[in-house]
Image 1 (cartoon, one colour):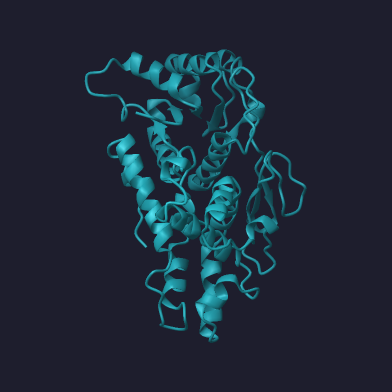
Image 2 (cartoon, rainbow, N blue to C red):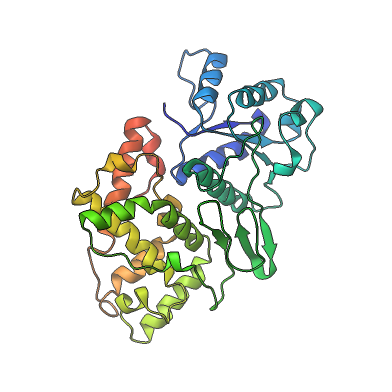
Length: 346
């Protein structure tokens, strides 16, 4: 089974490990986790060793139980020896034992507390995806990796990335930036997130494919915001008589990045449907499942009021949906049952 991430955990932390696996796979990141992915009748140890060697990233769910587990020490050591970047996700405020500290640095923790856990797992998925796509440099030293630092600012604004400038923008290695912003009318996106892409052609589609990493980042930045506020603002403009099509890119809508990000994925899907891009050319890039799921209510609002209140556009985001279906089918082909993480319904 092809996978990107190996998840190491103590059996006592299985609920957290399963939640991390679900969040990563919901974002299109393929995971290997025991016992789910050990084939019936296969040797446990051999399966673990093979799965680690085939992984591109090692996620360690670290707790007091994991800290004293000889099995986890062996798994971490194996990962280090293979040069696989490690993301230690600490679920308890506990320092590593001497044997584990040799392999993992406490300066590189991703703390998954205090609650809610889901907020920390969203960040884990963003970091993991950035590493896998090359947007976050995996400067591995004995399997260790310097993670982007999570900063908390007033009114719940979170900035993702390695170095925070103390404002709204954060540059990653490839010039991309992630952030969670507070629900406020002064939210701004970088210019790379506000470009309206052209109608598909061979040249346009080639450019869209080359910039997929940038639009992954823009989509993540939008999806991590308060969708309730985004929905309320769009509904208010529609209630004032503005057709959703005008709101879509309109300057009155402070979440106007919804228009440009969703438009990008719609046009990329159209490029695939019209054979300007072969689907296998997208191999190695994840479908923006987190964005797709978190903007579902917005899709309904814009679709149902596209030409005015109650005047829908039935084909709204049909190419984006078709792209989701392709990813779902591809995942199912690679990993029977794995496609169930994709809910491609409108």
